[in-house]
Image (cartoon, rainbow, N blue to C red; front, side, top):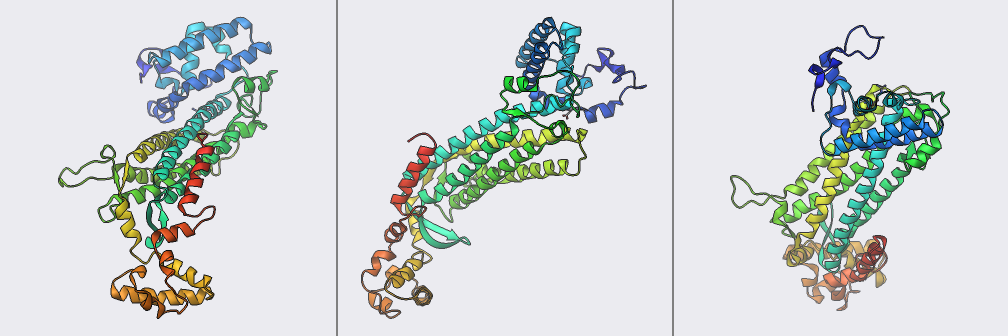
Length: 469
Ligand code: ARG
């Protein structure tokens, strides 16, 4: 960024005749936001175009001025897109940089653009426009990740693995079923963004500094031109609240939190101790000292970056807390956490969708793990209940059988029938059907259950909701 303090009169610039000395150099740096809010430029120009057309339509400025402003802003847009715009720290933020350039180009007409407007309603509008577009990108990326999840689940709708509680083997599940749990989390996540979008999509312009404006403006016209669903109905609220940014960040923190859980599982499962999956080499790095290492860097970083996004949520909440109405400069601090949240989230979703396409599954290792830890013990208890034993008694019978098998160093289906029958005479040779992994899986045959045919049905519903069935 170019600091033009030595190249023009800005060196001695004061805000207005009201000030008797220029802003201190250090303060200028401290208060400027142009280094990061310049990414709002396209939206700032969109907002200004809609504002100036409304001013023209209402007869507040002349049509000649509107035409000059449109031409000037479109040229500036091209300068910015092509990287030929020189940003100046002296001009503090994106809004003043663009306005100054416009005035340099078109003179007095440029100075009329700010009629009936303040940077307070301007910045709130810019951020909402930017965030609305960002939400749409986020939802697109979530859908892509969900598609990867469903594809992998489809390939493993009947692949047996241990389901865990307390990270101890609990009951067999299919890998497809496990993956679809994350599809559901992401489905709610997408819903949160879609819902937040409704509240983002309201127009602050017209609120001016805080109280509205004395010009005969037409806010509905501006709202419609910018694709907003309506206007913010209270001017003080319009310029001062950033709850929409907090909501976005909260929804982002939840996505990251969900992905941190899957990441943790990928890290565990790709460790040789589990050996359930292999993550494609392009998502891993080696060690500079240990030649044998292949480290799951991507899931580790997703886990780590979750801390960063959760931190941004706390930063934004803390920023808003106790601010008196209406606008306060504190709000300039909303941008970096918000931008970084969006950047982190978008790239995480993108990389994750691709990483899932590169997961190799070691079915025998999953299967072997599912046969350890007495994963079908609950099935034996359920079997006894179906033969008339009260569940609590069945629970105790199975506990004793498990203890016996553990002593022998084998699994429940490895015990001979005669030995099983010493724990309950209700056990007969049909017991082995429920003690196998396939029997256990198939028996959980209801909506939301892990039976392979239910997983298939869930995959179909998922594809339909993604618009791909
Ligand atoms: N850069 C400022 C921000 O991001 C724009 C609004 C400035 N308003 C003001 N009254 N100083 O919030």
